[in-house]
Length: 77
Image (tube, rainbow, N blue to C red; front, side, top):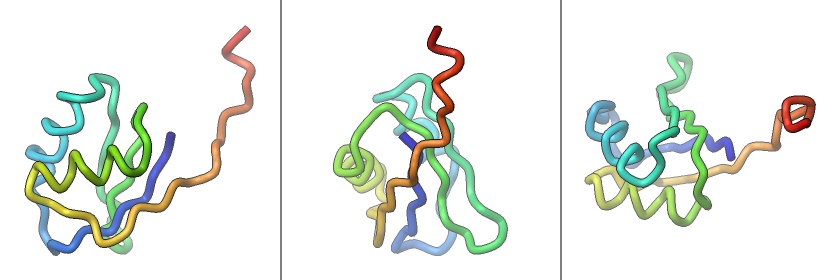
């Protein structure tokens, strides 16, 4: 699932966030949108789980928005 996350902190340590997400989901992908600083994450967990992982890493989210799927279904057979 794809998420857009606004954190309460302005300058998160992306290595800490990346490590925390990879402990739960080794295939997680996360980066920061240079336009507004929001996190973009693709993970196999719910929004509540994602918020919990981020909070435990020291970066509680102010907002977690699940984005609509961009999957076309073609690669699943």
